[in-house]
Image (cartoon, rainbow, N blue to C red; front, side, top):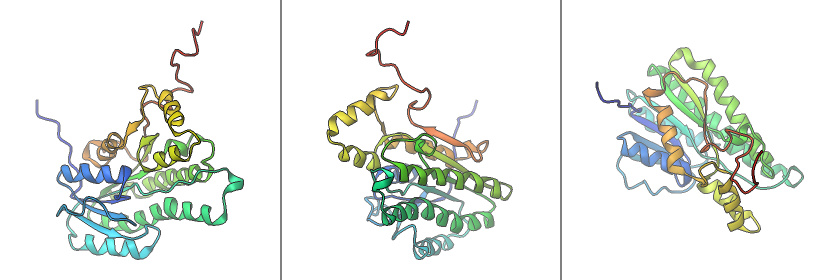
Length: 261
């Protein structure tokens, strides 16, 4: 019986490569011999790798994506992938949300994702296909207190990607959604820092997880690479829940609540 090997695109555009999930996805792609075009407002620790190219700018700016295109056009025959990890999160209730904060969240999380897909999809179609992983969140489906605007933006990303998956499937484009739960990365860490008692907040959230711990970003990144690979050809418009079992049930019994019968 032969070995089971997954093939990844030659070049993958990854947003949010300065930190968190985007950084981990880019690291693992480079380790798998894919080239990476990273897009972020901040520099990335990966810039010393010759297979990594950085485009510094906002993903909500078409000029940023035009510079990405310039890099991709230089290698027109390469197979392409896209992973949209960049996102921002503000903690607060709806009455606390200003028009500026709402616009900022939607601009990065939704508009930035849509612009990236709009730029990359035609080039994928010209190449005969490609794979896109749109990073949403379990919060796209399940509400979480004090994150109304973020949750709404991730719900929009989920439906944006699922609809695009249907629109472009017959042109060889595979688009899927990756919905992480809490992970030890930028957004969740900032949520922890916003808590009155950060240690208690983290311990309580970890205790809700069936494994009793918050996932590392590197674990979720592995799911992203699978969706990019030719091992995921059966998945189109799927929403892969990478939350360590958090949403498998309505509650996880730790034993502290006592006997159930």
